[in-house]
Length: 190
Image (tube, rainbow, N blue to C red; front, side, top):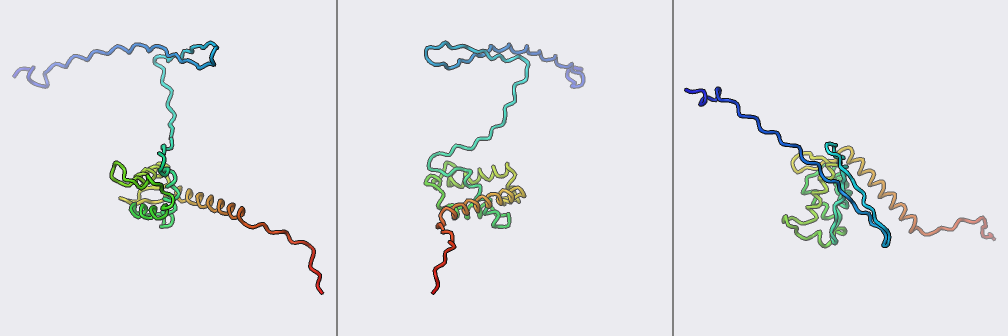
């Protein structure tokens, strides 16, 4: 048996060549828009090779809602209220069934159409909002298919209920008939 055929006696493979560092990038120039008839200047923004790139700030944008559909954020107070009305825990399908009843006057025409996944569009949006509620720490999974309010979820629900009560009280004040102040004059008694 020769040493070449034995794996323990085989020579080590040669090291891989080290790649040359990439060539520095050319500086970018940006053009400022100026009113007609004025001179424009070019400003160079140089990227220093080897310098760390500026960290991108996380941007959480609200999803764009197409016309004819209910925005995803509109489902949040309803989901929280339904869970709050059922001791903080409810199965997904029961939440969706109750949402269909409570939001019957809110859902728009395109919400009721079947989406590309084969599910009614508003149900897909509620699933996305449930994920967002979980990311915000308001709802957690209490088991397979079970949605459960967290303490932060209860606090958010109470804040929503307080805001609704305040707006209803303000609306009641605006629609209440004005009462005249009582005057000191009394009708003469005979």
